Image (cartoon, rainbow, N blue to C red; front, side, top):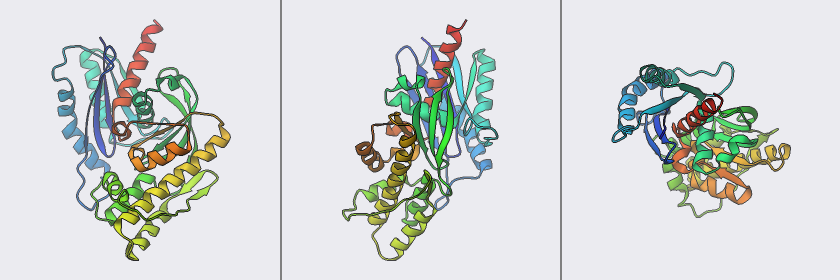
Length: 316
């Protein structure tokens, strides 16, 4: 009966989702922001412009053939639930959400982009039970490489404690920089994975971990040396992904030493890589977002809006 709209305007993707709480259907629409060939990402001003151009048509397409009224809107308003966390591109989604809320007289719920990733992982993996429990989560993307201890915050998202992180480069940045080196198009994850699976040569890596934190800037230099030294693209791609997988594995082991037996949830665009997922699944009892829910998307935000609305109504 109830419909919940989710909006997420990150620095890489315009994303919308519509959750029907009666049928459990999640409609999704997301578009990458256009990035010129050879470039890594966008300036915030360009991201704001492209979100503004794309968002209205995407929301309209979600409602094609829908005859139910909208119940509430959820939107990502900042990168993390932390003091000073801010990026201008999220203002596009917030302004649109507030306009819809005012015109339709429905509530608007704000969450962080990171909470959306975690929520999408729980929703798409069928582990909504973890909303009410403590767990370990890794948010691994182009803008974030973090190990988090997550606790429930009523039904309105999560409280998050940062316990492990990158000290320099993010995993997604490393993937894109190595991908561009090998001639891939930004974002480079899928093309890099396609190269890596063709590598039949064994790859040995040694991640750099300091008290649970990682260093990834050396990975770019190592891959460049391998490539310039004559190693095939397939080998370099596999080396890059193996290094990231071993890094995440070491960070996971560090956090499990602190929180023994805690569930482990992996979220973020880098975690859509099938090579990394397969190897981590062999080592840990863990949960992944489905690949289509790993990249920036509003599905987790829509689901959080649903949970918040239900919580509000139950307290009346």
